[in-house]
Image (cartoon, rainbow, N blue to C red; front, side, top):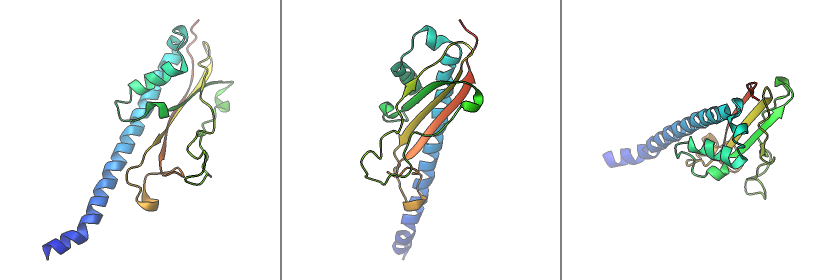
Length: 166
């Protein structure tokens, strides 16, 4: 009798435990990505990135170094650093095709190329970093995936005015 009861309750119990763990890891990873983007963006805001002639690869590596190994593939990060004319012109749209069907050609490709223009002193800069997080427990329509391929799009962004460095 106990074995039958355990058999009936084991699947829902372990599914709930798995969902709680996955939600926790996704939330933690999102917070760490946001923190990493804020930290590395400070290098642009203070002019350190410009003075060191930082390349896009170096910027991406600096973000990756602050992710504590939670992101399996740092090459999967999509980075856009751009100068805008004013704060109202800042546009934060994810570079993904929300309408593509799972398994369709190009469905897992970014819709915009990466960009790295850190600007000069007093420039207004937008920094956007995106990552396709692989969802472990899809759980049908109740899973954490928000992309057509079942992965979760994670993103972090910031808009700031560079300090008036020379």
